[in-house]
Length: 135
Image 1 (tube, rainbow, N blue to C red):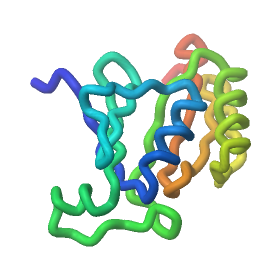
Image 2 (cartoon, rainbow, N blue to C red):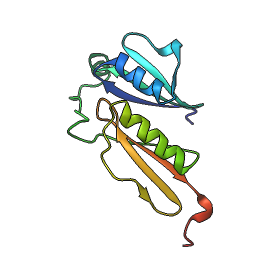
Image 3 (cartoon, rainbow, N blue to C red):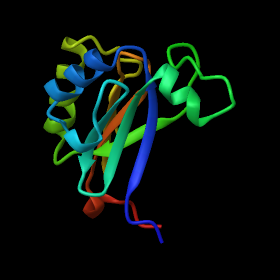
Image 4 (tube, rainbow, N blue to C red):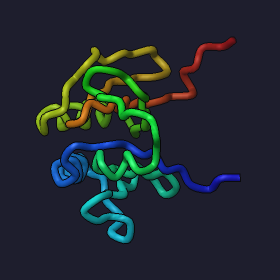
């Protein structure tokens, strides 16, 4: 059984992407970061490998998706509160991210998101299981 998850995302400018996510509070594992790739630490066992397009292309025979015009994946990460969701999305927008949807409050889940510098969509969600509707 898998013990770690690595999301691989193509990026146009690795330096700008690393700066963007560092400013949002993420760290990078220097052991797996070089001029072709940045290993962003999302949690203890979840990582996003930001790979320059040409390097990413060596792992697949398929054409790369332009995430600014097509959606290839929605990446959702949790936050500790509604305010943390708001703060992260606001900061992302200040750093050049695109807000592509309005915040949604479902009572038990509050979510909002942004598209990063390469168009990858990140959903930030606060989940309050105590507020889940009975089914």
